[in-house]
Length: 487
Image 1: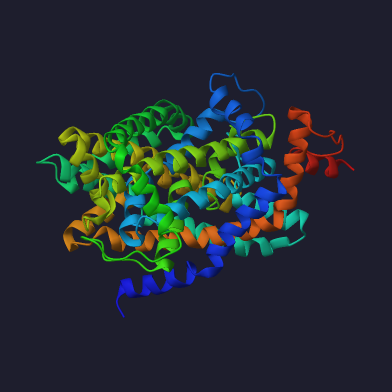
Image 2 (image 1 turned 60 degrees about the horizontal axis):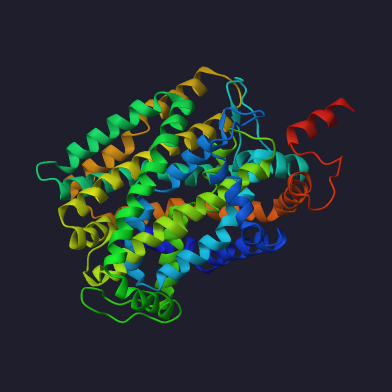
């Protein structure tokens, strides 16, 4: 049994029915338990996220709510939006797009829940330089202290951290960028493109969280708008094919897709699994990643930042991923037999010529770059939680992550070029690193969802005039700990 056979077998287990049910089930539970908050108050969410970008943020924290959201959106809008959606369609057919949408609609509330809990249970880092929070912290305080699990929470925390660090070693960002640039601009090899990408990423990350936040807040809005404008041009040019495109998406969401052109056909199980895998890799709802950077934001209430989680999934999947899917299907590129970024590049080039391909290659670079810099904050947070004393070893690991964050991706490209490893093999390992931490995080979210519902109820009472404020409810767990310690 070869390496990829082992990876495929492990993915078959990790991405089996339990995780799919868990993803959809958790999203459904937090959606229902919150009173369908993402649908009933969609206007409020948009007004208090996108509509409040220029608002001066107040409260305790390290970076602004918009900067934290920009890092998170930049971390989510990446390889999954351009290469990942194409990979889902190439393997599962147009019907996989339906499952991408479904996961996003319930995932808006899943992301809101994990972000809100990350803010609620956050705590100052031992060095005092910034706030830290995320899944491992709500595991420690929510499970370890409030649920009286004691040190047993560490089982979940370790499995979660190991899963996240799989993505540190096997990252698609550098690979997708190198592949896109080398295939678009003659004379630029994958190795050269990969090296430039790694150097640029190191320069930004070396400035720490504040520089990453400042960079993301400037680049993320521009890159999203640029990509969607060019995608919209292609969709308008082929608007007559849109009814057929939507028919393929909804028609094959629950039925197998027959072989056509270069498309080999897909069983329904593959359509569902690939759609859900790529949706999760794209918007990260339930993965537990972006809550780690959201936890550093300056806000007055956990749900205030949780709404940015809703916004993040909406932009990433409902807008950007949909644009990619429409362009690929409306131009009939999905039957070309291509895969990953190559399929998206070809779809844009077929309608806009070289400029279309160049725009996507640049978009791949920007998307992947913001993802890579954003993910640095996740690894940094896990190390800070793992080493809760300010020791030389802790500082060494933090420095290694800061200055060596781009190294694994660069090495992966070198090995891929030398041994001619296709993107499909790399995606297989990436899927494993996505599924493992998600499984653990979703279980913890279900255990702690009651606290999330309490936070939603308190937020509605305080800021939306819905219900009455409970004066004995602690918005921040840190305040509750201090109050209990003082008794």
